[in-house]
Length: 149
Image 1 (cartoon, rainbow, N blue to C red):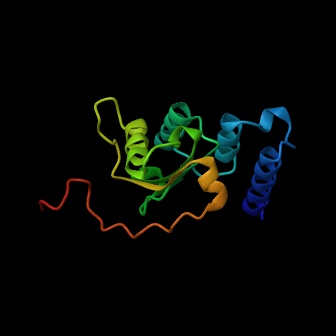
Image 2: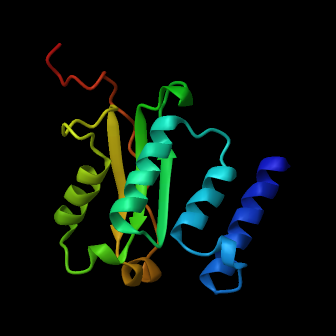
């Protein structure tokens, strides 16, 4: 019940914010990001860094960072992101994905975890037309070192 109640509160707050009906402290990308963190069961340090980097790079109108690790969630090895931002205007899909990868990568260019899935990188107009995010494929396994074994 508690998780369902939090989910409903989060949906109502987001709906109100999108309609301009939410209180000032619940408006804007940073407030929505903080509200999203408050309603999740587990959010580790790596997930928080990813969320902050995406918020900083794109000032998104909508951002979701989902820990899709198939082992313990605390491992934080797999993530799926959805980013909706005006920063994507005029960019092709491959450019958007490169920008998301660059924002999430460590300063040395490494990813820092096993898998990043970009579920969607859309402009607000595109998101308004179609907010569907395809389901994630099953992980083929491995430890990120490729198929050399």
